[in-house]
Image (cartoon, rainbow, N blue to C red; front, side, top):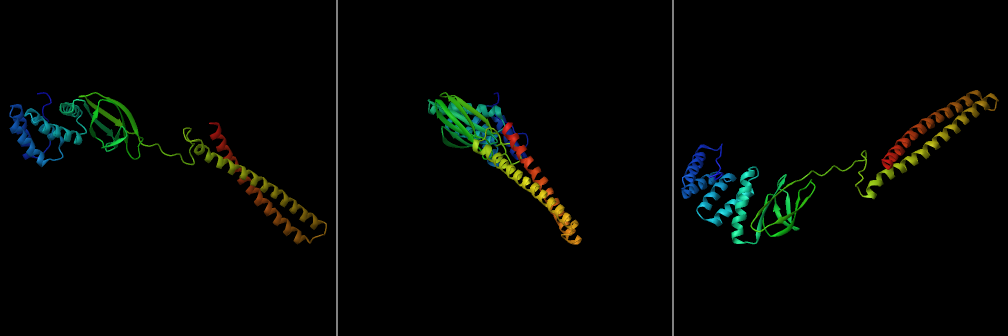
Amino acid sequence: MNASIVLLAVVAAPNQQLIIAGADAFRAGEHEEALVAFTKAFEALPDNSSLLWNIGRCLEELGRTDEALESFERYLELEFKDRRHIREALGKVAKLRAAKAPRSATLRVETSPPKARVFIDGEPAGRSPVLADLPAGRHQVVARLEGHVDRHTEIVANAGRPVLVSLALSPQPKAATLGEAPGRDQPPLRRWLVPAAVGAAGVVLTALSVRAFLDRGEHEDAAATARRRGGAGELTPELAEARGQDADERAEFHGALGWALAAGAAGSLGWTSWIVLR
């Protein structure tokens, strides 16, 4: 039979012998013997989903449909990689469940990354992969995983038919930092709060730089006045020179301060203008 059972390539020797014996028995039509062999192997390898597939196939051939359904359901809970058998198992589960509830459909939801929380029509359905019975009709499916963007999709379920939904979740985008341009999709208040604050700081720095340049001019005038009074004899030469040097130092300090404040103001206002005009 095509894709009737799965042979495992790398397992311990005793279990490998059980699997080969089970496969030989299955091909020979000895389904009860094959079931015994695969069940013993699964007891030693309880995380091996392929053995659940083999057990389900044996039970199906033996007409033990309820047990076969349970085995295929457990297989779908554990298996992530074998796309061929996942689809075939999903079809078998849908068929077996439909025999019990003819108006229902079987849905499997898997996500990448796995273990996302799944909601069907707003109700929690567990973590992916999820297997669920649904009434025929339209249904909303949402996958949610911390650090990722939610995925939404709508499905149409037909009675007795399997539905396989695969959802790839994208990581959340990084939040914009102070050095980054705020995105245009941000709320208006959040988008303009930082530029407004930086622009206001630029205005304040501009005013302070103007004040510093004015102070520099006053100190330069004071230095010139002290030296003029010394030359006119109103002050001793030593006192006039001391006052002149002190005024020169103050003028030099306020000049440097004014240029530094002006540079800060230019940067702040330039960044704000770029944000507004971009």
